[in-house]
Length: 110
Length: 120
Picture 1 (cartoon, one colour):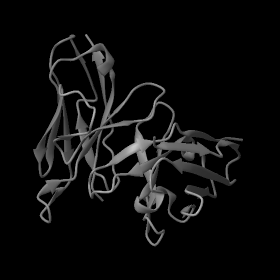
Picture 2 (cartoon, one colour):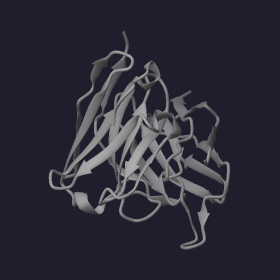
Picture 3 (cartoon, chains in turn yellow, brown):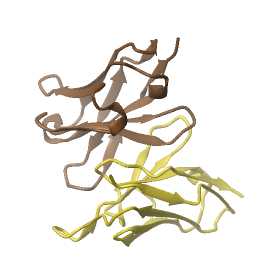
Picture 4 (spheres, one colour):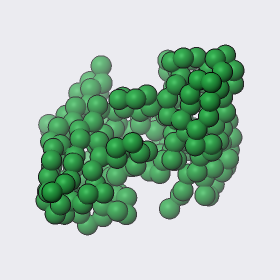
């Protein structure tokens, strides 16, 4: 089974500053059939279901602000919020779309 | 508008059973894999099970194999999760999630969830 490990577990960032979350998979999730890494990122705010932010490691879902970006390939991935806004306070999860989620990273305002 | 509405949660004793339902609307149900994802109180997300468009393939997380069964009724646009031999560790909000059509692109719509509490 593929295990997804996120770091850090939590971080506090000042408004307008950059937030970076890492996700590592236990094996490569790059699929040669389409040269895509099957890595998705979700945002979950308190009391709400998760929201899809990014798929294929770097493709933003429609409607997601461009301050959210994803990068990486193979086993190491990053979600970056370029300029943190109040509404970005949430828990962020990476996932291999065939199942496993990372443990989550809580993002707060410093 | 895509809507996923879960129902069937509640309080059940250890060893008991529950059947969760998810009513889907606003999209072509028969062309999407569907999943159940759960979240224990104050914890992270855990994928539980998924089912292929026509129900011919089903997959489960190891911790529920042999106890939970995922099914669907495409005529009713509905997804189900039959949960037997429930344990305290199964206490969670259970979400129904729609998988995007293109491989590897994740769950693009989620229900609001239904709470299952396993306790004596």
